[in-house]
Length: 189
Image (cartoon, rainbow, N blue to C red; front, top):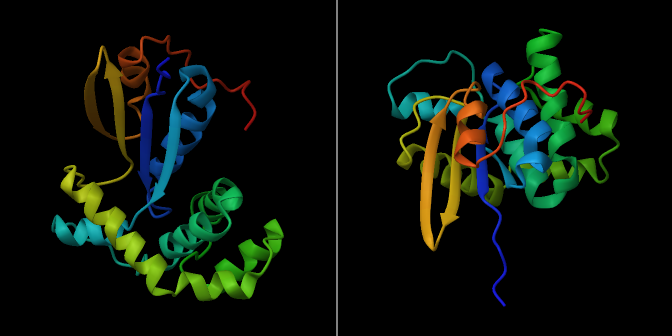
């Protein structure tokens, strides 16, 4: 008996992109309804802009390196840590690129072994994985974030679709044969 594979939806995001936050929250609200496998992939918007000749004026490496280290070492905290960064950057309008922010987030979320996670943030493993993911999304054609890919299998034929922007959920729902119901505010995350 063959198992039915859920469509895979990948969200490439960076805290430096407020539109990534919109896509992040929207996709989390729709994840169960769409019956998809959602993969959250922190990448570096700074490297994307550099590769595509766009400009960003702050070093953006600490947030995606930290989130990559979280995904590697404490994945159960990835959603909450991402939200804390976005709240700091786009709701509270506070600086969020420094190591002090990482410590603050670890303390607020009671993430165990904060020191090890700080070391992992600066590790070669986290750095290499972040570079690998960023190069992956660039090869997919990304020029900004959020970048979303949908991989589905229809009658044995694999199809991959790519989207840029936080407003593509109606199209994704349509491709999955599901109804789009707006923001689903009642779905607490």
